[in-house]
Image (cartoon, rainbow, N blue to C red; front, side, top):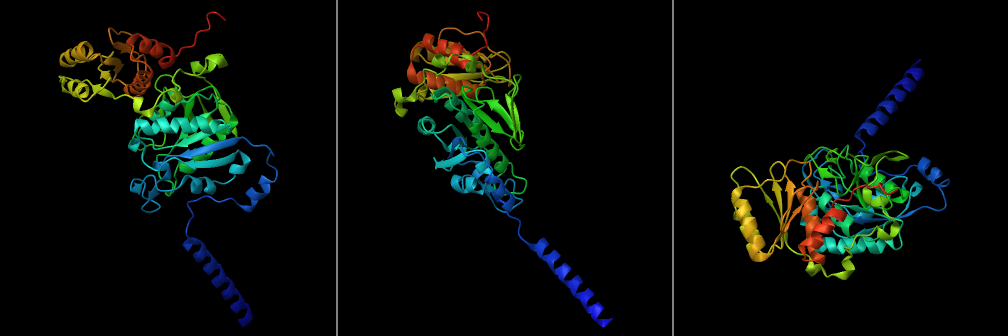
Length: 385
């Protein structure tokens, strides 16, 4: 009887000890492959797509103060190679290599930096089947649209990031990076131009915008909607950009950055209209050397009387080119005038990128207007089919 008691007590102590050890063990926030994953890798296809991941920083590479500091973190801390190394089962979807372009928040990059980034993407696509660019979400849509207009290769370019830093519980960083690699390697967005992939959803760079400062489903394409989504092994594409319907020989834009220098990128600004808006913003931008200005107007692009007077002066005296957009968040602008281009349904920040790129290749208002109508606002037209 005493022996039985001691054995029972010993079993209880051992069980309690193991339980306490398990509870006290630190939780790893970096996913690691398991023995099961390793055994699965042996059955992986021998020929995988080649995907280059170019890291630029942002929240996705952020390191938090602790595992529950969702807002207290330093963006652009972790290295992209370490992040990719931590992803489990990536060998099932692609042969992945990395390049560290930079490690800063998205808004820290200049337009000249984006020039270098675009050329790096194109260079990578000469050897790779697809490219993933990780960046911060604050100006992600602008970075993506710049790449969309300037990358000359039709191969997939996928921009991703996260709303939570890599090192917090429940981070969206790992899933977003993994799915972006999967999408780029699938080839399903070839000829789509640059796309965004976050929160399992796929969006066209031209149409997508950030709609919330914290939520993980922040990116939306107003009115037009997402292109598709990813559910584990299922990549579903239900809509394609109009550009993808063009013949291969007509697909690339005229904005080949190898034809210009980064110093050729002009100063282009955005002036916001509101009740009783003054003219000082436009006057100041012109005095500062702006060659182009986008107005974010009320309703269908309207601006105040003072702003309108400043715009007219800038056109007549400096030849500044303006693009009209709406501040409403959706809708199209159709009317223009001398040196005033209708922005169609581009939001102000997208229109600025389009105008900036256009002015880098021409100073002629009519030429730029034509580019806005064809490349800035591509439409599906099958009337002759």
